[in-house]
Image (cartoon, rainbow, N blue to C red; front, side, top):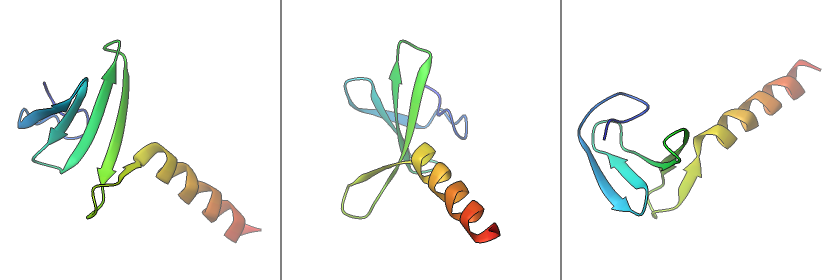
Length: 66
């Protein structure tokens, strides 16, 4: 399995359809071989959805512009 972020092959399976990339230190899940969700792993093990984080940054930047 290749990492969808850095394309490294240095990944391992951590759960059903869930993988971890040892190169860029992210966790990702694959659904139907088409939908991929990417997560940052916090120090306490909490997963942060990177898409949500990007949307949050966009919303905050738009708020600063007004």
